[in-house]
Length: 330
Ligand code: 13P
Ligand code: SF4
Image 1 (cartoon, rainbow, N blue to C red):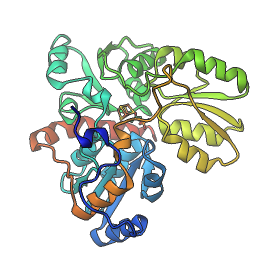
Image 2 (tube, rainbow, N blue to C red):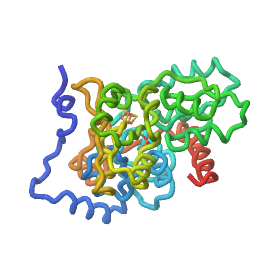
Image 3 (cartoon, rainbow, N blue to C red):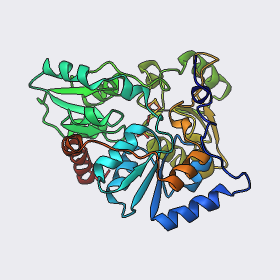
Image 4 (spheres, helix red, strand yellow):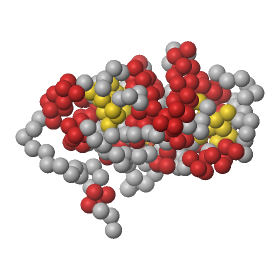
């Protein structure tokens, strides 16, 4: 039987909050008092995005976490993102509003199994997508995100043998774009695998001018019909910089908040899922709420910790990614 908390993953907070409090004001006050910064991913609720000091994709968030001079980083995102911030800024306190905000993709690659997999390819370099645990990063040579995966692979010699994990969809896309033969780990994201090509095609009949924007974590049949494929930042920029007025968006629905805010005259339609019971919200990302964000800043908990030996090994592939990205102006 599920506990009350499991059933009420979004609403549940285990501390009374005075309902007359203006949480936006309270969070602002706490931020100043504690020299804290709020970093939020585009998949967070709109109100969390609105109160954040920085909103971005995984690459932007890592770059921001590496350079901030705040004492406390509140990471409004999921566990692997907060871990990455802790690895890059180990002396800072890193908080995650809901400690159970995980990631199905990170879970699809247990480090002990990946270690065995990697042993089969001793002459291969290991590139891991940032959506993985700190332990997995510690087993890697270079980390990448969806906005630099293609360029990172291209920055390596043509004859370099490569293992790519954990996302098979991003891996397949990168292999196709670069013409490289990558050895792929068979992992995937539960949100990006729900979209229906058939329903998108039908939707396109109703909106013949709509452009399909897709995240590379989507499956091949969706990417085949996409007008643009990119990270959340890439998708947002495409919609803003192009004159088209209608867009079908094949990624987590939180990104629509910023797309609509930046482009009030344009129409954004979430791509339909293949099952009417499914939805485009990531259940992990959406565990965080404004209430939990307020409590975590007030109580300075839940805090993210990463063992020192893992930090020492995981920081190298992340820094390598940041160096290559800086050289390429990404
Ligand atoms: P980006 O924001 O880097 O495109 O990542 C998408 C994602 O799935 C994060 O969980
Ligand atoms: Fe993980 Fe997918 Fe959620 Fe991103 S959208 S946090 S990859 S489960």
